[in-house]
Length: 509
Ligand SMILES: Cc1cc2nc3c(=O)[nH]c(=O)nc-3n(C[C@H](O)[C@H](O)[C@H](O)COP(=O)(O)OP(=O)(O)OC[C@H]3O[C@@H](n4cnc5c(N)ncnc54)[C@H](O)[C@@H]3O)c2cc1C
Ligand SMILES: *[C@@H]1O[C@H](CO)[C@@H](O)[C@H](O)[C@H]1NC(C)=O
Ligand SMILES: *[C@@H]1O[C@H](CO)[C@@H](O)[C@H](O)[C@H]1NC(C)=O
Ligand SMILES: *[C@@H]1O[C@H](CO)[C@@H](O)[C@H](O)[C@H]1NC(C)=O
Ligand SMILES: *[C@@H]1O[C@H](CO)[C@@H](O)[C@H](O)[C@H]1NC(C)=O
Ligand SMILES: *[C@@H]1O[C@H](CO)[C@@H](O)[C@H](O)[C@H]1NC(C)=O
Ligand SMILES: *[C@@H]1O[C@H](CO)[C@@H](O)[C@H](O)[C@H]1NC(C)=O
Ligand SMILES: *[C@@H]1O[C@H](CO)[C@@H](O)[C@H](O)[C@H]1NC(C)=O
Ligand SMILES: *[C@@H]1O[C@H](CO)[C@@H](O)[C@H](O)[C@H]1NC(C)=O
Ligand SMILES: *[C@@H]1O[C@H](CO)[C@@H](O)[C@H](O)[C@H]1NC(C)=O
Image 1: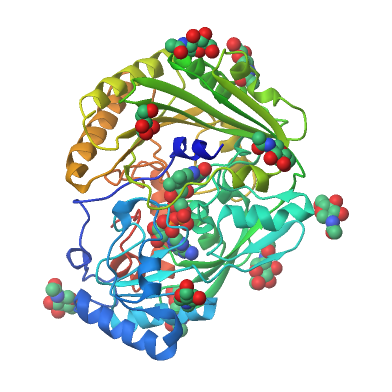
Image 2: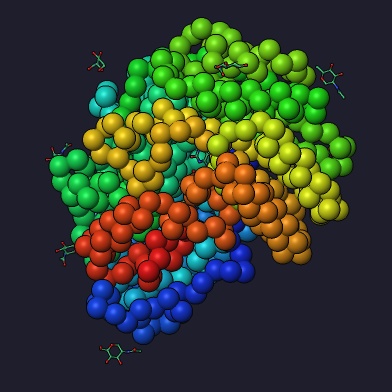
């Protein structure tokens, strides 16, 4: 099963040469109390000096072993940068202190949780200050919920819950971070019944851009509570997530590998599964992808299927089980045990994402698969090429969770099934960056263009699967975008998260 980890690079993204500089973004309008007049080096020097004076044991500078270890805690090698210093806060108060220092010094900074967002600048910064959560891993179990600190991975969460026979709604692989995944939405193995990870957050502790700490829940700052459900890092730094838990002592799992003969049937079963799943009684979810080895010419569809309970093989995946495959392994286990086999090691390769969504149509998806394979053949000489065509499912029932829970989320998804198709492409060397990035970007937008013409395309773009060139906010419902901007204006009038913390997907002006 160890080698399986190599097949699982579903969701992250990539930024590169198009990264806007913070200084270009400095604004001078009534919504911004400060005008940034401090350059990157001066701001970082000021902030690193102040932080080191207060927290000498947890601020690291280039050259130290701790700095070097922290500077490579990234999944995508492209995300490795050279921050001026790295601060590892140990508490929410220290995070608040750091944010006050950033605003006082007008220092540009980046924030890192699990480090899986995969493009340069999404979670790291050259020359600025990196605030990393590696030393905030505590949690508190309350049965129906669990308080989780932002240094935890999903494996840490499932491990904490296993003794109580409970589970949280989170990531599908072992080492993905809690904060990034939860703030951008979060696709889990129980998506059909419980919706997205963000829909299962009861409360957030937040450090605002002026260093003030607030609680955002259904009754305290409810507007911010809503905005954090999919609004990513535009409003504050979250220092605690209170996640709902569910009774889930066992899960029923299946791992099915196929060869090229099965590609059409595999795609068809995927479309049937996302459409069929309209009134879920059994919580279930999957990882579905097709990898293509250009050296051997072999094509390998893969299903990781999970459902709640002990009925095995898992009934929700019967349509896949019926397709002849290369290997099928079923088990009844726990979320912790399952995740323990699904590592996504850091620093494995350079990797570019790209995605769009569409109404499920197996014939069109099969044509897209063939087009992808031909496009990959054109860059087959790229060293270490690792191309994967990923199919994430978003059943109508997942959208209905937010429609009916009295809270909603910033996506406002329609009540219909969609497939989020994604290209995740790994490679070895920086010299091939522009070639691979251009190929994937062009291919992604070309296929989306065809789907726009045939009426299958949908606007939604998932931050967890998107490429760095993709603008994820303008495709959301206009009234939600407007509401987020008002909430940002209210909670971050200094523009700390739009001028000083540029990384990731930003709401924009
Ligand atoms: C191998 C792999 C598998 C994946 N599988 C899934 C999956 O199963 N389901 C899914 O939905 N997605 C999946 N993703 C996508 C994943 O959810 C995103 O990459 C997510 O951002 C990862 O969270 P993180 O904490 O590890 O990321 P980071 O890179 O640490 O953070 C992501 C963003 O959030 C910001 N941020 C981090 N912590 C905080 C905080 N406390 N407060 C405010 N902002 C913060 C960062 O600055 C950054 O912009 C996967 C990605 C990879 C690479
Ligand atoms: C910023 O706004 C102030 C006050 O309105 C004005 O005096 C100044 O010239 C502006 N600066 C720039 C660079 O536009
Ligand atoms: C620095 O590195 C050492 C050795 O790995 C480790 O024991 C220590 O905890 C690190 N310091 C911090 C603040 O993480
Ligand atoms: C935990 O929650 C479940 C479901 O709400 C309940 O049945 C159980 O009694 C609770 N256990 C404890 C120890 O409170
Ligand atoms: C929200 O947080 C406040 C402050 O801690 C608390 O008093 C209140 O009970 C919480 N509301 C909910 C619905 O959890
Ligand atoms: C299995 O496929 C059939 C059509 O072939 C479809 O009617 C059914 O809903 C599918 N079931 C699941 C769980 O995907
Ligand atoms: C693909 O798998 C099927 C079912 O296991 C098998 O019959 C077939 O020979 C395989 N084809 C190739 C090319 O390996
Ligand atoms: C099946 O699950 C059991 C129980 O968690 C576990 O001990 C075993 O390692 C699992 N088998 C495989 C092949 O993962
Ligand atoms: C493709 O297959 C070759 C030969 O088995 C292997 O060395 C290589 O690692 C494979 N590439 C990928 C991306 O799996
Ligand atoms: C910090 O910002 C919040 C949101 O704008 C505001 O309510 C609060 O009063 C500010 N705190 C201080 C100390 O300025």
